[in-house]
Length: 109
Image 1 (tube, rainbow, N blue to C red):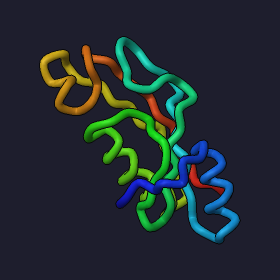
Image 2: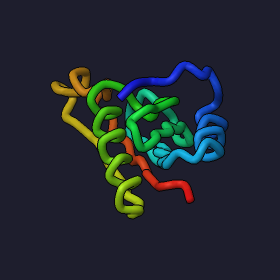
Image 3: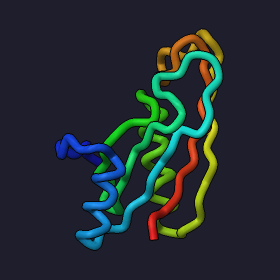
Image 4: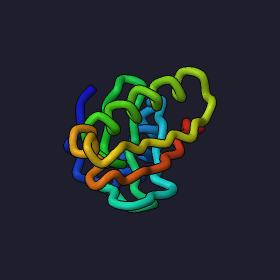
């Protein structure tokens, strides 16, 4: 997995990758509670090789979203993911102050 350096809006990156014939998934923050690193509407795009652009969180949450996105690309089944942790472990996984986030992951057709 590696972050690309196109410097584009993640949705523009998704469009470019689809135009190149790549398999692509988009992860979108749909809801947050408490403190969360990204706001609803934030996007992360992932291709079938694990390249990604954008951000939906940080820490190990983002790694988990990328892994789930690869599954979504493989089987075509969209997923709703939810991440939340207790205050004492929040910083370790990238959700400060015990925030929770819900992320929808779908394959682009």
